[in-house]
Amino acid sequence: MPATPADHGSLWLDRPRPGPASDPMPEDGAFDDIVVGAGLTGLVVALLLARAGRHVGVIEARHAGAVTTGNTTAKVSLLQGTKLSRLSRTSSGAVTAAYVEANREGQGWLLRFCDDHGVDHQLRDAVTFAQAGDELPAVRAEHEAATRLGLPVRWVDRLDVPFPLVGATVLADQAQFDPMDVIEALVAELREHGGSLHEGRRVVGVSKLGAPEVTLSDGMRLRAANIVLATGTPILDRGLYFAKLEPNRSYALAFDSVTPPESMFLSAGQPSVSIREAVTRHGSHLVVGGHGHVVGRTRSEQEHVEALRDWTAEHFPGARETHRWSAQDYASHDGIPQVGTMPRGRGHVFVATGFDKWGMTNAVAAARTISGEILGAPPSWATPLHHRITGPRGAARLAGFNAGVVEAAIRSLPSLPGKLAASDEVVPVCTHLGGCLHWNDAEGTWDCPLHGSRFASDGAVLEGPATRSLRRRR
Image (cartoon, rainbow, N blue to C red; front, side, top):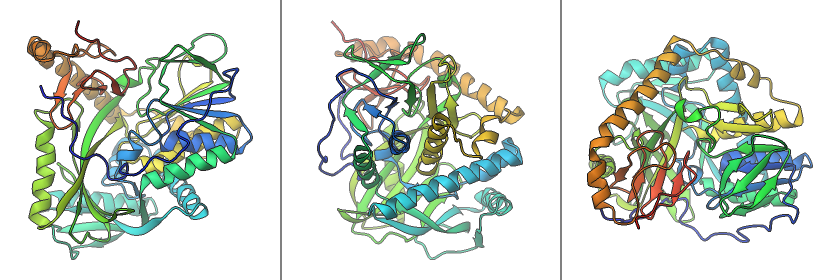
């Protein structure tokens, strides 16, 4: 199996790294709060705590923005595909309304931060659309749900775009940006308020007894009053979050030599297609994304990439591909992010996960919730989200998540001998719960079909919940 890397990498990450990359650790290894993960969630919660005068350290296994935030499509929108209509079927009216309010607050905070710190962003219409008639009922349902929830959407039957569109709901004055511009501004502001960023340091454990303490992969231990896990999926198994989340991988391509549409589009059907313009230091690009699947449960990841290329070539002839990348997101059983204290953390270990591909607004909402709980002033909309009850549809989806895990485990076992023979560097067995790994032919990685852990071809951890590298062949 060839260990070839992705052809290009994220458009957003194609930039010089700002310095200094990492701050020195305190000599006594003590903080008021430790945040694990330097994506949007982690940096916003760290900044909010640092602004309150607390001594905050952010621990990042790679570099700031390296994982989901640096690989997103970066739409800052309250119209989120068919999200609101799906939530309306599985959650109470109060919970769905609280979700919208949390995202509204997250969007507002993020755009104010951009304005205050000179981060370029563009206001655009967000569009959920039908490519064919069989997708129209889903778009109509989203339009009606958004209207009930107070969003000023409008219905259109046609738009002047070069791809099929037979109906759409449109929400004006949403936003898009280059997410790494935001990450760099957050890191600078965090340092201005006395916080620190420690890159290239992987957290592998958190204490269960006594004062909260994290252990790094090199054996170093750090102490804090509170630990915040902002790592996509939690790196701790307590609470069994890995069994309550479905990990999804999706793809994105950037193109130049073409005029992108001005609005941000997302199709209602499957496989989904996302379209937006990206305005970066590299100029204007068309970004086409989508064609997602559960991690490790597809015949070929490269086929998904090729499908996006074919779609773009058909509808944007002459477009020249400049970048290719993918992202990993986690969906909860009821579609609502899981935010708050983690079981067996004595109220001092916090978690934020399950943003379901809408992390730009949900990340900030989660950060405001967690920082509010630590500082004693949680936002009002956090209460109905915390106290929601899983209904029959949510319970059925949770059962479906775990049935999928069992099926993936059974299906993968017969292929293990062949994978062992083909891999001359590592043992392709996940270090989380022993799943038989799937070779990702688009990215040259080992992906776990059980709970979404991913490893580089040399065995290094890329995505959790695993924290240990693959065992190397002797």
